[in-house]
Length: 203
Length: 215
View 1: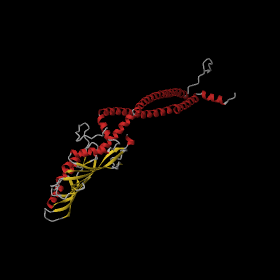
View 2: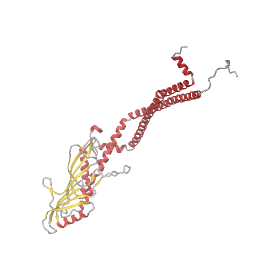
View 3: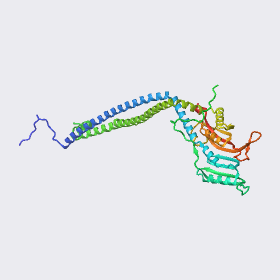
View 4: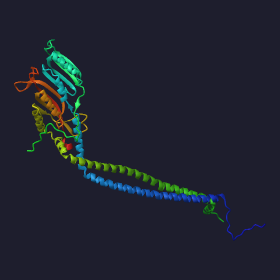
């Protein structure tokens, strides 16, 4: 059979594996490029949104800063007051209450006591004087049995006689068990002050 | 026919294999270029701006909180203005020993005791660890002497402890005394039951503020 060429028909290269690969590469390349371009556009959009947010926040910050700078004196006034009230509260609550201790010790003072003196400093107590041996003994028992004192020690400095009615020189040292301190009151309660403060004269 | 390099290149690119490889190569190149020049910088700038915005938001919220707190403080200040004015009147830089002396004398008189003497020492910076945080706070030491009976002195002590200008008592010494001819006192030789008078010495301190910080 005769095989010839028909020159009226276009000569087409016979299909090869590379044709398919070529078609796939072209399609895939197009898709990849389109995707990346979309990603770039989206990134631009997101950046615009974020920048607008930043601008809004900046505006709000500027407004508030302006307001706060105008209230700077007011702020300083409150800060000063807070510091002063904080200091007052600290001073008040670190102040020891001696009046209770004072009353308690005085309950034990023997009526026969002479040259009697008491010193209170912090939680330390010192009581010196002269009293009858019986009264000293009673005082010693009272102080030692009280649960408000601890480490009570008696020193007899001069013994006049063993007679319970003769006066001997003594010295007591003791410690307050739980020294008390001032408390802050509820600010909503109404306090009755014991004495109004005498104010400065304005004349 | 003479084959130049361009012709040769054209021939290669004309084939399916050559075209596939060249398209793939150009695509990869474009992708890398877009990644390096567009996408990664955009990502970095967006994440940086987001972090920036977050920090600004925190600051903005702090400002809003501060404003709300200032408004609240203003309200409380207005409600308690009289008390605050009274407080500031007696917690300032003015030591005013005369006013203090007058009040101490009044406390003694009210409780049937006598204020014999009052010494006000110079203001000093407190070494109390609880108070060192308060810059500008000074303390003034007081040395007070009262005379009276024990119940009266107990009331004096109680009033001093509750006095609105905080007086912190550091030590108390009380002695059963007798008056000597030159108006001094000496320790008493007769029993307490015969003469109930005591003299009470108090070392205390109260506080003032320096002018520089708070006036």
